[in-house]
Every structure is written in structure tokens, then in C-alpha cells.
Length: 315
Length: 315
Image (tube, rainbow over all chains, first blue to last red; front, side, top):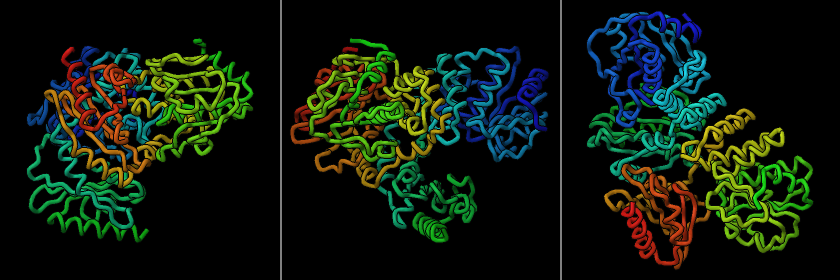
């Protein structure tokens, strides 16, 4: 049932035992939103429990309260209300959906939301779930404290690429301004989020050497062998290099994960790469998609490149 | 003489022939501010002339009106008022100071401003000169048009790292929100600003190979030889790599511009690098500064590195 933000907070008010969760492969928005709501509920006399069927990525461990999130949980928990944040599909919360038997309240901003919850509030004009949570706090008149502001700022800023992506609205920026006014030190948050290790920069240097352009510069690709890679090294941003290359439409990152598997990340300026990913059993969005190919690196590059060129030729 | 913003606009109103200029090595803020003020003056019946003793970097050529800027000028020009934007020192405008004989009105946000102008308005709490210009437009009640908004947004966003740097205030973000409301397509601007050429990415790969860390990882430096470099290649962002390195306080980029000159860009997390730059006749802000050293690359690295280590040891 679709509900108003006010109704969401009435449900929270009425519930005795509240569990808060969010999607697996957590990011700044899912964790920041969980923690912000938890801070609010604690400040309002509740004792919510935060559960996550995953681990906290080290770069987000700075978020105030993150150590209170129970990660990789396996035990059933009683609750009156399961609050699911920033998850467009019930599958996205992993085992939490079976471990917690309670009516679900879902607050989310994904346009692809499947409306799976008993109660849901979905605002796809919001750049982040954190933007909705902050709006709700404003409406309740709650005076947001600094810890909550840090969580909300991180939630909002990470989901809109620090106010650069097309999902950033005047509201997004005004909420950012409000949170700075509360005392958020955004350059410190940026430091946490953008700090790279010497290993990462050395790996980036190697990966950039592999850059190839094809099809009159419309396709650019890089490759990396992740078989002996330190799992703490983030390669998330590497695809932005071919993505931002002048004249490139389709950018591809081929990552060898084992002898038989190459994970392919795709980005684009014009072509719908979710269709390209789909040809290899993957998926995603028009501008960002991915798939896995069971092949050697050379074979995977050849297969995906051939399919990408065919797509560009079809127009 | 220090003047109010209102007085600045009275001077503009009174002047018949206005020349607008800004610092050489132009960036988003200097060009965006020049163009925004020019749009305002034209809309208010003036016929200002924009002069710049440099070229327009290709990545900023998208700014509406940029083709009207007279670049690399060599002829004297009569004027009633020379408006100098975003330049903290008269040297920073190159030959324009001798080519244009007129009282100078300087609007700037650099804390290091030498107060060289006949009339000056300096607000070092502004993240960008564009932020001051927009504030002035608000005060005059002028309804900012979309071209001006694009120039102002670019000015503000580029000087505060898209609202990530410590100089970003709630006001900075609220002005950003206002400009989005006028219709600025910020993700398109980001595409213009972040598009890199194949030459640039190849150069970046070479420059990343030069990365060195010193003083227990607190100083990181990269070097590049710009003597045979295509001037269209922007190396502006390269310093972010050592800057974002885990544990680094001071990041340095050494750029050989000719046999006798090395330009040094400096960034920091804690140390005031404007003081380091000052030791070599340069200047800037606490977190971002620069200077030129008349020496070979090896000598420049040794001199600046020694001074940087000394600063860290002094604490």
C-alpha cells in the first residue's frame, strides 16, 4: 500500500520493535539512510535494531553509528515493523526478508521499485533515499544532530556524484546546504570517500596502459586481472577513464576473476548498454550495465567487442 | 580603496567604456565570472570588451560567449574602467595591466589578494569569484538568464571541486541550487569538464608512473615535462592523484615549462601550502597553491621537497 511520509512516521511511532535494513552491496545512501533513521528513532525513545546481510565497506566505516549495524546476520529476529531502505526489490535485502517476519515499510527512490512492501513511499525524483529521510525529518520538525547530518550528507552526496549527476535537483543542493549548516565537514567526508591507496594508484597505472580504442574511437576498453588482487582495492572508478574519453560512446572494463570468468562493466553516453549486457546474460541500466562471460580474457574481449560494434552499426 | 558590492555596480553603471579581464592560465571561475559579468552588462545596455592575455582552454570553450573574449591581445585599449576578476595580484593579468590605462576595479575571493586595485571588493569567504558575482546580481535584482547561469554555475562548481572542497559553504550550495532552478544542466557541464582526450589519458598514464612518496608517505609528488606538450592538453586534475593518496598531507606536481622554469602545483590536507608557495615567490590558498622555480626539474624537486619537509617538521 502506498503511504505518505507522515504515515511512514506514524507506523514507526506505533511500532514497539523496529528492524531497519537496506540493500546488500551497501553504499553511502543505503548505510547513511539506515543510520540516520536509527539516530532519529533512538533520539525519539525507540530501540531499533539495524541488520544487514552483508559487510560494511571500510570506506564507509566512518559513518557515525556504523559499528552498531549487525552484519552478515543469520538468526531470526522478532519485530513489529521491518523498515527496508533504498532497496528496489525484496531480493536486494538478502536473507533479512526470511529472518525478520514483520510487515515491511519500504522507503526508496529507485524508479525500478517493484512495490513489494506492505507500506511503501517511493519518490523517484529524490536523488537519494537520504534525501527523502531528510525531508521527513524536516516535516516532523526534528532538529537534526551532527551525527545524523553526516549520515544524510553522505547518503545524498554519494548517490548524486557530489551534485554532478543529472538526478541532482535544486532540492538536493538545498538539503546539502542545510546539512553543511548543521556542521557537516564535507571535505573530511570527501577525504574518507576519495582516499586511494598506493596499491590502487599503482594498479590504475597498469590498467590505463591497457586502454584500447576501437570502431573509430566510439568504443574504449581497459582490462585487468583481478585473480591475485587484494580485495580491499577498489576498482570501481576505473571505468570512468574510458567513459570520459572524448568521442567514446561505449566504455568497457574486462576484469578476469578466475580462469573461466571475465566480469564486464559497461558504461555509455548514447547506446543502451543494458541491451548489450543482456546478450551475455547480464543487465543494468541504459548508461551503466554489466555481465559475466565464461571465457578467457581474449575471447571475452572479442565476443563483447563484436557485439558492441554490431549494436553501433545497427544504430 | 575597499568598496561595497553596491559601489562596484555604481562604478560599472557610471563607466562608458568597460574592459573586463581576469587572470592568465584561465580556469572555470575566471572565465565564467568574466562572461557572466559581460552578459549582465550587455543586458543592461553596456558594450564591454573582454580581454585576456592568454588563450581559452578548449574544455571551457562551451561557456556561452567565450568566443567574444579577445585572447592574447597586444594592442592598447582606451577605457574608463578596467574590471579585473579573480586575480589576486596585478601580475596575474599579464600584459593587460599595461595595455589598458584605466582605474581598476577588482572583484576577487583570494585571501592572498594584494589589494592592488583602485577599487576592490574581496570576499575570501566566497568559494569562487562567481559566487560574489551571483550575489551581486541577486542584490541588483537582475533576473539571471540561462547563459549567465551556465557561466556562474561553472565558475562556482569548478572552484569548489563540485561542492566537495572545504571552501564550500551553505551559501555556495544554495547559489548552486538557484542556478539549477534557472535551468542549468549540470551533468552536461560535467561532461564538458570531465571529457578527456586520448592524448591526455596517455599523458596521465606516463605521469602516474613518476609518482613518488616521501617523508613517511606524507608527501607525494609527480612530474611532467610540458615542453613539447600540446597546449590543448589539460593537466589540471593530475595533482588529485597524489592529493588523494592515503596518508598524504602535501601533494606536489612539477611541470617543466622550459629549460629554466618548473611550475609547481601544491595541494594539502593539513599544512598551509600557500606558505610553501610563498617561499618560492608564489601564492594561493592554504589547501591549493603554486609557484614557479627557475631551475632544472631535479633541482626544483629537491628545493621544494626540502622546504616541504622542513615545514612538516616545524609542525
